Image (cartoon, rainbow, N blue to C red):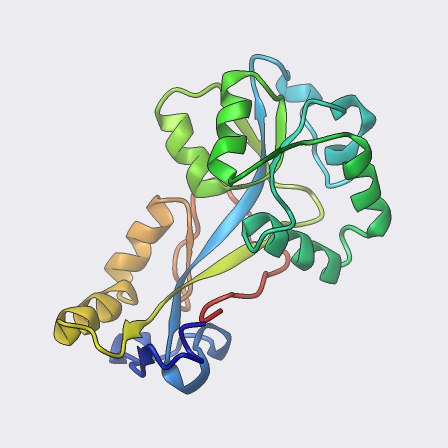
Length: 219
């Protein structure tokens, strides 16, 4: 835990003026410069677009038994954070989790491995993958499609903090300040993330996130 260990120092740049308080850590020890949206992906060679899941309930349809790859939800990762957000948002419940388990998903050590299994055809579907990861794989020619579930999806804040003993603190401050500028927030959208500043553009093709996951900064 970086905060509890005293490994971070406070810094809130002027360029972050107006950022919602939910993206500022205790005592200004970190700031969320972006939100990472998560979507479901599928292999377009195995799943026609009209047969792709459209909702969270579709993602646990028995048709996907043995065909779903997912990063280990028991870890502290994007999948577990998304599941918690979806439960809190009321879009899934314990019955949904039971259905997911009944489909015997292929558990992977990380999201990258789950994406590779879908892209390579070992699985047809992964219900929770960062949109940014999907875009990068798609640009490289992977046969992938994506779905933003109709009930909503999560966007996890991406925080940045400055080390208490940073060897180049001025450089760290410049980077943090730049990430909150309109230029950087536009570039963040181009990579498939949402910026956190008011009026920041959204990634192309994605509706606004319906519910937000909690940042694990400092943990």
